Length: 208
Image 1 (tube, rainbow, N blue to C red):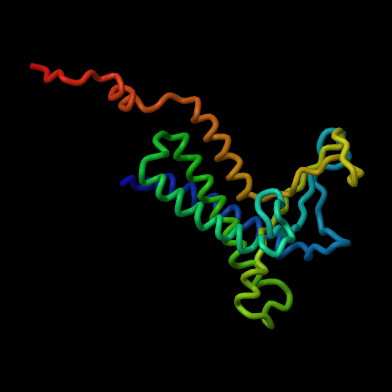
Image 2: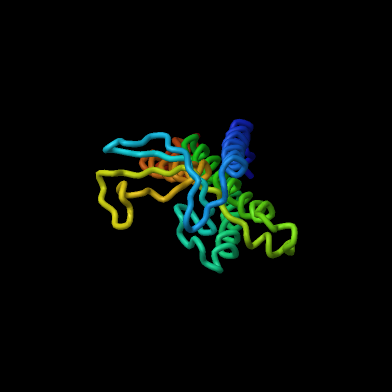
């Protein structure tokens, strides 16, 4: 069985802490989003290429808002995250992530899944009025905090005066996207030299 090395554990912890600290900063410093108001801080404005805002959005769906606002999303996506963690752990122990690039990708996706899963399990308990609701109700009211908002004025989009808005995301989502890019890069890399040698080794020679 493959053991997780110290540098991977440190990477997971650092990315997870960065994700959670950034989200709790948003929760404590920005107002709750409403259908008519979205608390935000402009960072890059007036550009013809890209605008960037810090916002506070509650996403009950999955990455980039898919399934957001549906009744089934909290159950489905929390279950998917649990299954993903188990599957990733099993694959690591079976040496599926056999080189450094794949190992870093594994650490990134583990941090991303853990970060967003923590939101789903905890954020519902900090909503106004949560103290009057049951444990199960607060649990299913969990959501993921998204706060990075980019728009592109040069891309027309119906309903947006400042151009196409990329779905808001967070550090955990970024970790998952980085992991996907690393997996793609690793797919072009040759297998370990030891495996290649075993494939070309001719049987039946005892060396005497």
